Length: 135
Image (cartoon, rainbow, N blue to C red; front, side, top):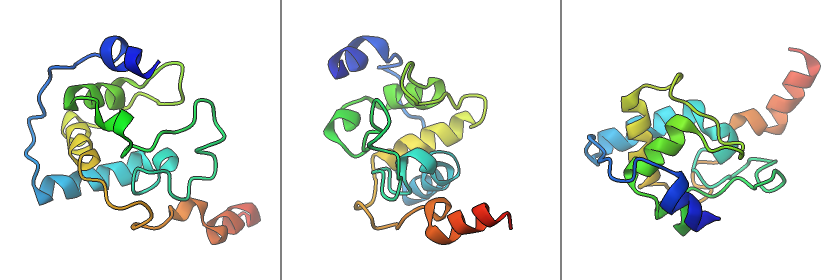
C-alpha cells in the first residue's frame, strides 16, 4: 500500500519547494508544525508523547521514517494540503498558507532527534488534570 500511495495516489510528485532550506525556513516550518501538526505527530514529528499514535488505524507514522522521507517535497506538500483518505490525515489547505505548508516540508526534511523537543503540553498530566477540572 505504501508503494501505491507514493507512486500513484499521492500527486504533485514533480513540484519543487520554492523555499530555501535555511535555518530561518526550518524554524518557520517548526513553528507552523507546532501549531497544527503536533497533536498527531508530536513536536518532533516522531509521535513523541502522542498517546494514541500507535492505537489508531492506520497508526500515525513517524515523519522521519524512510517511508515518509521517500516522498518528494511536492508529494509531502500534497499530503499536508489535501490529507490522505481514509487515514486520519486531514487536509490543511484551508487552514495553512502555501508558504506555511512549504515551510513544514522543509522542517520535515530536518526533524530533530526523537524526544529532543519533549512532549506536547496538551498531553501532559498537568494539562489533562486542568481540563478535567474545568479550569
